[in-house]
Each structure stands twice: as structure tokens, then as C-alpha cells.
Length: 177
Ligand code: GDP
Image 1 (tube, rainbow, N blue to C red):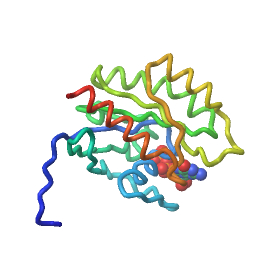
Image 2 (cartoon, rainbow, N blue to C red; image 1 turned 135 degrees about the vertical axis):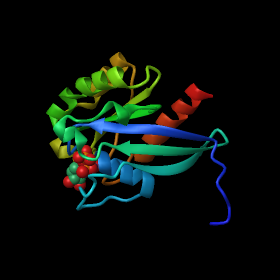
Image 3 (cartoon, helix red, strand yellow; image 1 turned 180 degrees about the horizontal axis):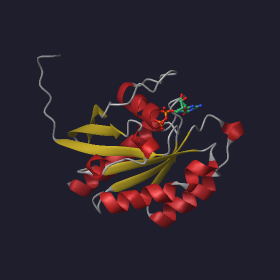
């Protein structure tokens, strides 16, 4: 179908942030390519991946940005957030510290991103049930207080990744239209 041009109605920029190694790149690959790569981290330099979806009869190109390792040096720049309509703030359900840092990432968003940005909190690595260190109810409560959408995902199994992105994109569509 290379001859059929896509008639894109909207391009939505979404940024994925959170501590290093929580699974940001894998979540993105799962959504964009339905892949999980066991030996990743050649991601330095990769800026974004896209996937086109249909929402409310509109063709929406989701342009999903990866920090590409910048967060390790606390060097996520304001350019990264520019024009973002949505954000996924990811923590690792097996690492309490990554959840404790979520508030800092939200502050970062409030400082650099548009005030109308739609934010979703993601507890990733849901497949590692026996290593859980952050209770679901605790995260739900935090998300409610902060006015964030919330989902627990597994980039490894793919569980909830698709539905989380769709929920976010649907809400962005609702906000912009
Ligand atoms: P990033 O630094 O936040 O982009 O994290 P990566 O996507 O590079 O993932 C960090 C590590 O966690 C890698 O070894 C991944 O294979 C692993 N990982 C990512 N997502 C999951 C998941 O959902 N479940 C499990 N068990 N491991 C994951």
C-alpha cells in the first residue's frame, strides 16, 4: 500500500519520562513496533517512534519521544517537552525509589510543558509480581491526588501497554477537538 498516502488528521507528540531503567524504551517499542528487545540500549540518539491509530474516526499519528538516556545526566532539556500534548511518567513497580521520584518528574513537566498536557502515570514491570515494592492502591491514590491517569503495564508481556497509550491519546483527542 505504498501508493496510498495516509491522510493524517493530527500529530500528537507524547513524551516518556521517568528514572533510568524503568522500561521507557521497551514500552515505546512495544507500542510502536510490538517488540520487546532483550538487549536494548542502543537508544542514545533515537529521538522518537511513531504509530498511526484511528480515534473517533480520525487518523492520529502518535509521535512518542524517548529521553534516549538523557535522564541519567539530569539533562532532559526543555526542547524535549516543547509541543508535547501528552506525557507518560514511568516507574518500576519493583523499585520503590523510582516511584518516589515520580513527584520530581511531575514538577519537571509542570515547569517545562504546556499546562494542558495530559499526564499518565505508568507502573511498569507488572510481570515481576513476586518483586513488587509499590502497592497498586498507593499509586492509584497518588494519581488521583495529582489528577493523572494511571495504569500498570508490562512491556515484556505487553499487558496494558496498548490500552494505556489509547487512553492517553483518546484524552488528548478529547482535549484538542
Ligand atoms: P529505560 O532506561 O527506562 O528506557 O529502560 P529500558 O527500556 O532500557 O529497560 C530497562 C531494563 O528493564 C531492560 O533490561 C529491560 O529489558 C527491562 N524491562 C523493561 N520493561 C520490562 C518489563 O515490563 N518487565 C520486565 N521484567 N523487564 C522489563
